[in-house]
Amino acid sequence: MSGAFQYPSPRYFKRAAVVPLQIMGGKWYIATMDKNRWVDIIQWAFRIVLGAILIFAGVMKIQDNTALFETVAYITWFPVWLRWWIVDLLPWVEILIGAQLFYPKADRLSLPVATSIYFVFFLFAIYGTATGIEGDCGCFGEMAASTFGPGMIIRNGIFVAMATVLFYRPGEVDVSSDRQTEREKTGEVE
Image (cartoon, rainbow, N blue to C red; front, top):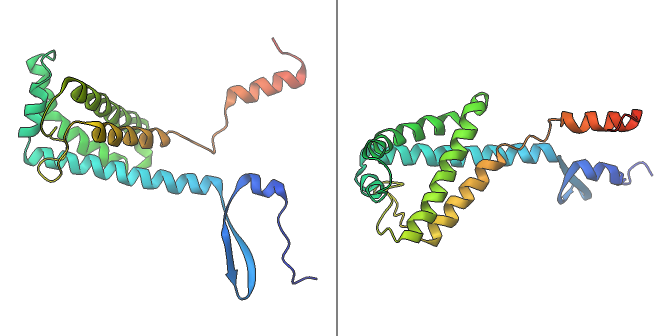
């Protein structure tokens, strides 16, 4: 029976993500894709979304930063000079880091900074909701309303989660565990 379909071994399924069965020419085939490829696709989708959001937010803040200025004014425990720096530099930093997310060779700088930006936004959403800051935060200018509340906290939490996924490297080997395994094999366990 050379024409009969043979299922791959169970070992194959451990390293491949199985896609639903597809019918082609009257025969059933299992379409599979390497798990690392799925991770790459998801990471690129997250890069595009997070980078585009940062660029869009930065451009909207440059066009009209009054809502951002009013929101930063609520943070009374920040010195005045720091509030001015936030209002003046934050849009440019967002645009720069958002653009760098599209260039993976800049990951050493862009990933930690982008994740930090989204984490600070997440903390500020919690702070603004807890202290009762009213009105628009100025995140996206006049194009999209962004008021403090549970919706903003959830949205920024999702952005932080998406940014942390970009740190995952499935192809890299953990050197410390390899050394530990080597020591166990040779009997040099401390």
